[in-house]
Image (tube, rainbow, N blue to C red; front, top):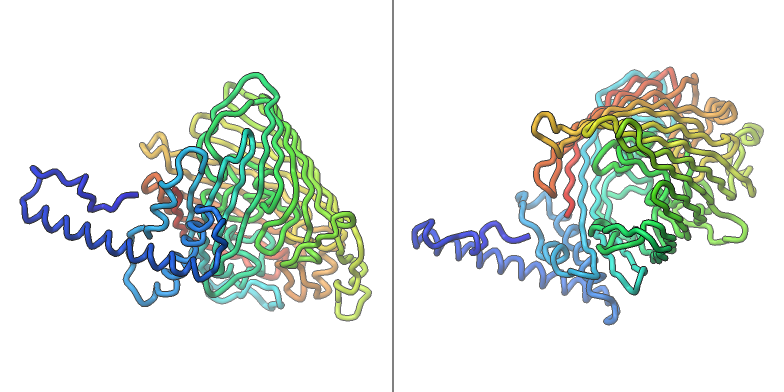
Length: 502
């Protein structure tokens, strides 16, 4: 992006000489400020002792993280500025051709008024008036290496906590809230993986430059292999209308199949390998990934011959009354060190950790998306897992069904704005309910007692696209029987989301 006071935008005949001189001074001051920030970022980067052979995009990615961390640390002591750090401007424009460089920032402020709660437990949603905020920033750096091969690196930072420190709801209302929250910006590597595309001949398609996607051409009929650190939802259980909490629905059990316990660490990432066979009308995907060492652990289990998370998905594309749609059927199986809900009831203190041994959890997701008109789409998911053993990574849901709609504001002259509405019902198995009723604690829920009822959620949002890069969203969620407990709630949750992406 260029400074708003760029001389190129100031024509000599359009202002007085004094005005032009003033604008030049402002421009020079802005450039000096950007030079100073760039110099400071480079000094910080050198202090990290990044190897001299590290590619320039890696250095830029780290500079982006440092810039935002520094800005956040001083945010309460300085006025808000809408200028873009020079390192981020450079990231967006410096690497044409074989490089792909993008950035996103998402900030969410969310809260709710007091609700009925005769009692609370260790993992309950706090009943008083509460609000929390989260923010994330991600650099998307990609490089084409050879024919069909590309390497992707995503440095990321996250700050903040979900409501009640990300406890109290199985369908948690903030998709940006991590189980490992932080009071200060915490940088880490979100993704670092290699892709290899093998063309099978025939018709080709253009590939636009996008997040983790280098521009070019590829065969429609192809095999693509992914290997490294990534997020399983990047490849599996996708949906055009509900799959991105930074842009559309925010509830965990709406943007994903709620009972899909995909392998991940506390931040939602894992290591593994996957392959996709793509044809014009269908695709098939298969993947194996590392599971956590135990339920909700930040460390991954590297005993790949003993434990792992495995999934296979078939996707069929179709047209219905002239409108496009997709049906996906996914099956998954986790082999991990996990505890049994039923056995934990026999252990003093309901200590499920004492029952952990090698066990399996299996399940499926049926996923539908269908365009109804040029501006209205519908989606639905039905997900299930066996519900006998601990949830390893996602959330405390054993069965889930959702239905929703997404509408573009074309008729009102706002074609880039979106309205979304969805409803979801979450449930757990009898073993799981008995475990919570006796005082057991899950990944996100556990009120100490339980009068069981299915968790019902309605979510709606309006996303206003301010510019091509900036959007603002208002979001509302209404939750009945939070954490499956008819003794608590209902809860009304309001949120505002700001998203920057270029």
